[in-house]
Length: 583
Image 1 (cartoon, rainbow, N blue to C red):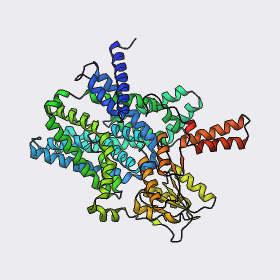
Image 2: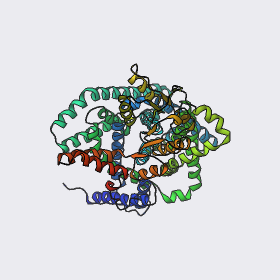
Image 3: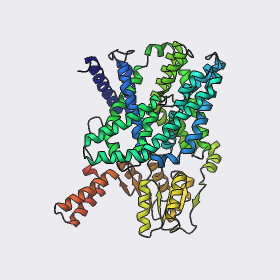
Image 4: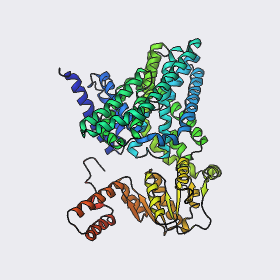
């Protein structure tokens, strides 16, 4: 049996047009997903009507969501999830509760909702944020492992979990006598699913992946990973929970086993292919005529939601002890309306909680807020810099950003400062300690600092400062003027640049070595004054090349001479040739 010709044409058109839209967006220095969204609008039924089967494209788009969240689960791991569990559990409840209260109150006062039930429903719909769009944006910016990236993802995961409760409670909101039973059943489903997933992830999945890997069949391994991802996602959808939640948990099952990196490498091409369909499918839902005719109402609603949610999230993140930078970036990243709000809105339409016109307005509002997300996230850093320059905030910032945990001897000198105690930072600290050099660690994760103390105690007490390394108050505590060198191993490119600039401003002669995340960043960090810039992927290639040259008979001295020249030249001779469309 052959596939329907129209479906094959629609799929080809959607992928081809998305590729073109993504290319144009990148050439205009914009995130690729903006190109996908605009592409969907143009070829969709409300644009040129080139796409004839939107429903099938949207079904494939759900696969994109599953792969996105599966990859996140593999990369996130249970260890990292524990670091942000407090704000995930409590902060998410506060955020969704306060957003529902705000939207419900405003909608009742403005007449947008005719009853308390309708107000609560609108609040629930608008309280969700977009896991897919935020995750894609963070991935493109290389910020999934930053503090603000992990806080965002923790809150988003909790929202996806809450979606199951919302879907269970909506049908009985107007039946108070059945509310308790519905809530109990929904919680029971979640607990049973999580317990089963934990059991399977601890004993079943590791053994399964070991057996499959032993076959040494690449395609069989890929098929197993895909079935695991989509199978768990389907199971959660049957339980009334979100597909995203199931895919994320499936990723967590893989994250702690030896084959995690191999599974991630196999799934990434599928993730990127189907994810672009998801973003294009959102664009297909946008009706330009409806937007034009109701532009004032939609813009008012978009402004209310995006500003209101940002103002709600900001103090919540600050209240959990995170810095102003993290709070602003998180609030700017989560102030849109999520893709699963489409699901809730459709349920509300079927229940009669909203009219057809209100439903269409909600779709337009959700779509616009999603399109604005990458631009809003880009705006966060300039806003943080502006806030730091405000005289009225200086006293607050000095008090809030002063390091609360530090262990720095008064007489410390000739030490190496390591900014960032992640995977790279930990290895570097171990190397320095093994050679007997004094080290001072700067880290903004309290869990990482606790790990630092537990790992090396009682054999050695490593001085540390808990705070954002780019903060001037934190840098003052590191004794820069007496340090031998500074190694910057932070996962955030913007923070890396700030630390480098501010450290050299205080200690111009300091030897600074920095970790680069992209090829372009090598030149930027070098121009800013870094004595050495290391690109981890290039270094891995150099080590492989060194071994191969030695195998081929090259002398060790010649090999080291070649490698030294390549590093001195900032890897220019081995950098990949830019492809068409790359800057």
